[in-house]
Length: 346
Image 1: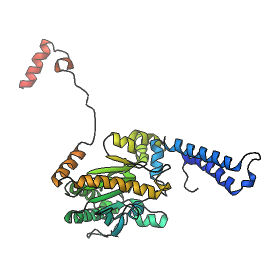
Image 2 (image 1 turned 120 degrees about the vertical axis):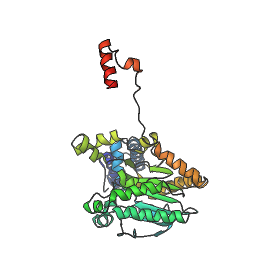
Image 3 (image 1 turned 45 degrees about the horizontal axis):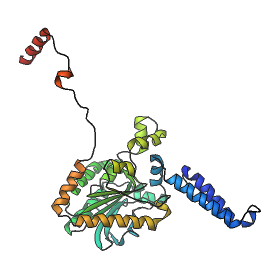
Image 4 (image 1 turned 135 degrees about the horizontal axis):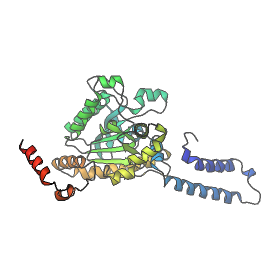
């Protein structure tokens, strides 16, 4: 099995035993029913898979979100959506293959879909810039969103990027400005907007197409202000502490839902989205349609107000209660009081 993760080794070993037994039934232990042995291994395999994938830690979910076989935006555009017609270019500089978008059909609804796209091999990753968009990618996304708003089409974005491209060319063409303009404009579009994190949701590169009325996240995806490796390099001066950083960042779907940074978790098949694309695509479609129907029933003014309040509420924190003024500091002696009054009137 290619691209196996460390925590999947017990599953791989059992699967190997099962495959060997099926291919060479003559080698199975004498005195034991062949069918019975098969059933015992299958039962153990199912239980092992359930135990492992029901108790994944934050770093293990990050590994699943980055799995090379995980479905990407174009995979969902051919399953969750139908009749996709891609549009190209930002009409300002160039075509960015890391950002794809165009008209599509979601159930009975005509929508505009925009998403970041990674590559499956070296050649495609170079073409797609490993899913990290340039400024022209975000400006293309904005052009398509403005087009959708003009014609009253709901906007759906699929997020799967480690972050916006941080190269010299991107800085020269103002990547920060391009993302900032998207943030501002997405708060003002009158059509419904739904964002779904389908893999990696990294930093401003994800947020650049992530301002929405509803933000969904797949069960094994993550959404973070910085990658675990980047956080570990800053806090512990060692990227080897990425697992510790992933836990501290609270970037898993369950943590994000508890912090009210996402609105709903889209379940994945046991083992991850890459194990069953049709089931994952159908789950995503069901959740998108549910929220789209709800949003379309709201007046545009109400949607805009709720969208604004949603993002204004982000960033939960606790304030330390200050003691009363009389308890905050000891009383001054008469000489000190004279000095304070003199300073106040000086």
